[in-house]
Amino acid sequence: MTIRLPGAGGALRTYEPRTEPLAVTPGTPLTSRTVFSAAHVVADPFADVSPDSPAAVDWDATLAFRRHLWSHGLGVAEAMDTAQRGMGLDWAGAAELIRRSAAEAKAVGGRIACGVGTDQIASGSLAEVRAAYEEQLALVEESGAQAILMASRALAAAASGPEDYLEVYGHLLRQAAEPVVLHWLGPMFDPALEGYWGSADLDAATDTFLDVIAAHPDKVDGIKVSLLDAQREIDIRRRLPKGVRCYTGDDFNYPELIAGDEQGFSHALLGIFDPLGPLAAQAVRVLDTGDVQGFRALLDPTVGLSRHLFQTPTRFYKTGVVFLAWLAGHQSHFTMVGGLQSARSLPHFATAYELADGLGLFPDPKLAEERMKTLLSVYGVNQ
Image (cartoon, rainbow, N blue to C red; front, side):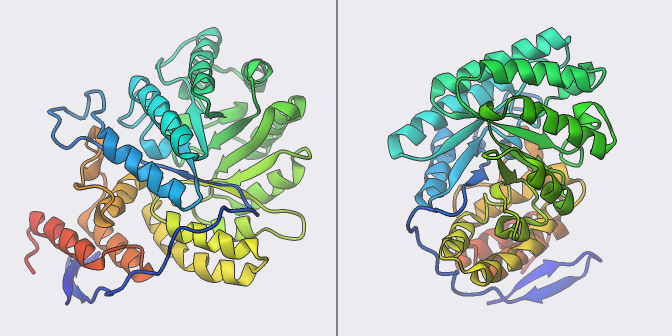
């Protein structure tokens, strides 16, 4: 069987899909690295909503996908950027997602950490930003999940310099019941976060970030760095206080960062581990045995797909993630909250399909082929 796919120049080309998926089965718990997949939400395709409406979520399919990730030994990073926080999912929807997913994690024994932000306010004073953070932190802690303090658009707008970040984060860390993960999300993921930590100079911003951690090392489980700059992450990792973990958020360079070097390694909290979940878990199990070469042999070939999904504008990577979940059979439709399924082009989808199929990511390659052909027909491509 073959399928005709559009190339970047508009001409159709013939592709022959693989017939068997990569053989991956759930296995033993991961031991050498702590690995979170930042999971997407599944929209309700039958809800009569507009892109500006509150998100309509298919809760059954959304929770089923989280059980899929847990079954492979991965943790779930909930209500994060991958779940469209600030891009279709508002705080009310995120709060419900946190409650439901935390309860599901408790029921099945899955690991979960949840995003704490300030998206119930669009802007405000430093006191209002702090109060918004406090409200979300309380909800996450009440749910029994670990907290991830996410970067705040409102704080980026309200802060006048590094001292404001030190004050707000210091206040939050002092009152946190358990150690949290600090999340530095770069402007390539969210342009409103330009100049976070009080400076557009990354060296100065890094110093402030590390000052926050150094002042409260007992309240910081780890950091998630999403700057798509491998060397900067390594430099930050080497400067962390003893016992504070680095969770890579670098969807361009994750194999080498997780593998590490003679001075340390990164754990992982990655959006690309949504579509790569089973394969990523298998790779880390190989790493658990000390086989770095085998780990890299499994994970290095996935980087091309990840770089494709996260290409500029990077914030629209979520569209490719949900597209692959549909092709893989994890949901029955290709609809996203906020109408974000329209954020990438047909050639982009075609390349994503080809790369994912080449990796054997689709449990049922025939289903993926049929669904890809269905999408192509909507765009006027007849097979």
